[in-house]
Length: 229
View 1 (cartoon, rainbow, N blue to C red):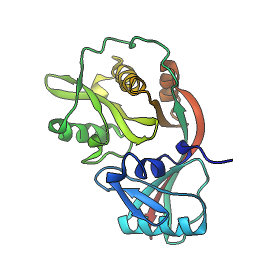
View 2: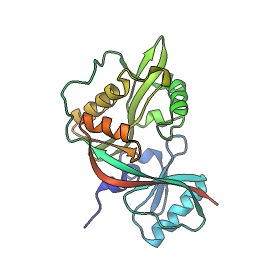
View 3: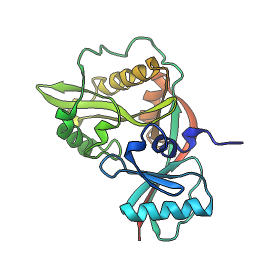
View 4: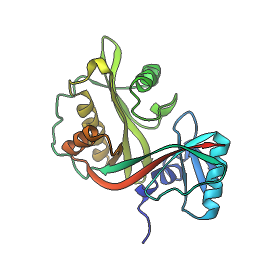
C-alpha cells in the first residue's frame, strides 16, 4: 500500500509547492536553513538514507519528521527525538471563531524581527529568519508589540500545515492561540485545502485545544533531530 503524502510531508512539500526552498540531493532534500530545519527522504531505501545523511551533513543538522521509524544513520547523531501526533481538520467544529477575530492582523516582512523574537521566547518549534515567508501568518498586537501569532509552514498539494502557534507568557489565557489557529485553518479550508498540524503527544493541553477546534488525529509521527558527527 502506497504511503500518504502526509507520512513524509517535508518530502512532498519540497518536491512540490515549496520547491523554491529545497536543497535537493538525490533521493533526499532539506529546507533552506533560513526557512526551516526539516529534511526528508523519498523512501527508506539505502540509497535514500545515504542521500539523507549527505544533505544533513552538508547543512550540519536537520529534523526528520515522518511516520516511519528512523534507523541509525552512519555519520549522524540523534540529538533528541519525540513522538508527535499529526492531526487534520476536514472541517472546523464551529463556523464562527472561539472569540472575535478583530484583533488579528496579517503579519508581513515588517514584523519579521518581532515574530522571530516571540518564537525564540516561546519555542513553538524551529523558527528562523525566513520562516514567516513559508505561508500566511496572523498575529495579535498590543500597543504595537506582537503578543501572539499562528501561521502556515509546510505546504503540499491539497494540504497546508498550521504552525508557529504561540503566545507571550504575559498574555496567555485570553484565547489568542485558539482564535488564531481557527483563523489560519479556516482560511486554508476556504482555499479548498485540508489543514494539518503536529503536536508532541506529551502536550495534552495543545492536543485538546486542537481537537476542540475540529482537528482529529491522523497518524503517529516521530520527530528526530539529527546532527552530523
